[in-house]
Amino acid sequence: MQDKKLSGFKKLFAPIDMTVGIPGKQIIAFAIPMLIGNIAQQLYNTADSVIVGQYVGDNALAAVGSASPILNLLLVLFVGISVGAGIMVSQYFGAKQREDLSGTIGSCVTLTAISSVIIMIVGPLVSGPLLKLLDTPDTILGWCESYLNIIFIGIVGMAYYNILGGVLRGLGDSVSALLYLLVATIVNIVLDLLFVASFDMGVAGVALATAIAQALSAVLCFWKLLRMSDVFDFKKKYLKLHKKYAMMTIRLGLPSGLTQAIFSMAMIVVQSLTNSFGEMFIAANVIVMRVDGFAMMPNFSFGTAMTTYAGQNVGAREFERVEKGAKQGTWISMGVSAAITVMILLFGGQLMGIFTKTRELVDMSMRMMQILAVGYIAMAVTQSLSGIMRGAGDTMTPMWISLITTVAIRVPVAYGLAYLTRSEQYPGGRCESVFVSLLVSWTLGAVITFICYRWGKWKQKAIGE
Image (cartoon, rainbow, N blue to C red; front, side):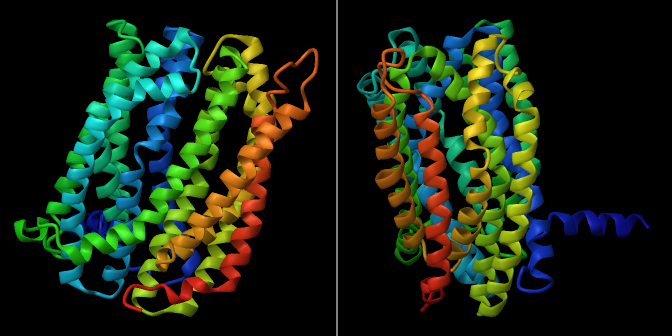
């Protein structure tokens, strides 16, 4: 009996072969640990915001939020490596190509080390000038800069967790990444309270707590991969930067990295508009984005699950199965997002109250959240079908869709609405324009993504074709 329990426990942490079984069931089984893990990941930022908002004040809350777009922009290298690695790992695992799988994982470890050094040097040099370029209010400028600099100096942990977590998910193991992230999240919250509430370190304290906790999660991922010798070889010879695997990782991941860069640059441009509405709206924007982070988690989880599902089945040349899974997974994701939308509309006010005691700030945040709510269903379509295309190796199409929706649609709509709503009461326009533009871009993005998926170009992009 004990042996059966141990066997079941080991199976829980074993890679999942998604080329067999009912597609929808496999996607859900993979996505649930991913969802819990993504929620835990979001708790990093949310814990930072709640603790600085309650113990330091609304301006500290605004500082953490204003730093986020710049942080996201400088993390695009890791996004690209992670996506490229996940696609290659899932396809080689599905095709049972052990040597290629080992070479891919080893090259990604080395690429991540190189990228980390670049960010550690560049990040602190550009964070201050970028914050000033965005007209960040002087009242929060110093806090923003110290937060970013600490995160950049400790970037290695964040980088390796994201890349190695992507490798584990590509192998079909979403449970291990979840477990390690839960441990790190608990550590992060404890350290947040210790550094901010007890040591009075302010914004710098939450940045230090995050860096330490993510380093712990990275170490745990390394430990897990070293114990997976039955699946691939994690030896010194594979850590050499092999041109074939490095270039393919970059080729597949670059469009996703550029997508993140485009999105982050658009966020920075819109952040400048956000800053023009003052500290109160900046703080409201932070609260909305934190709640938005949780609301988006199912969409991101199903999107990643669909990438792994498509990658393994494309590797096994099961294209009909890919399409069947795309249909089932998208409907499931839309259903979950619809339920979340209802929950936000019913209980959003209570969620906003967690971050601040200021009633005006809670009301403003809830008003903005109501604008976004229905857009989460549209994002379910975008994330699911984009995941299928990426898993098949077509990372360019989602990049172009992101370019269109963020640069050609969101930014002009945000500034255009702000201009059109100027009045004596609102000389800079109405602040709602920031969130209406986001809703418009999400909705049109879903339509464009569905059309591109049906077009079928992704079927021609599998590795080796």
